[in-house]
Image (cartoon, rainbow, N blue to C red; front, side):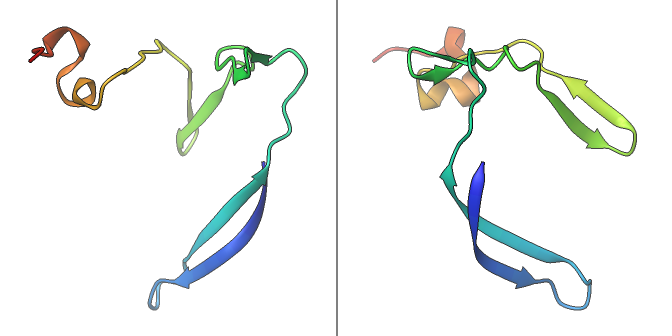
Length: 79
C-alpha cells in the first residue's frame, strides 16, 4: 500500500505517536486478484501477535449482515 501521512498525534509524555494515513494505491502481485477481489488465502498471510508470537490465517467466515457479527449467521432471526 502506498499512503500519505495525514495526521500525527503525540500521546502526552509517553513518547509515542499515533499516525493516521490515507491509502492512495495498492500494488498486487499477479495471480492474487480474482473477479476484481483479492484472494485472501493466496499470499499465505501471517500476523504478528506480540513478542516472538505469530499466527497464520485460519478459518475465513463471511458475514453478510451486520447482525451476524454479534450473533453469528445461524442465530439470526428473520423478520
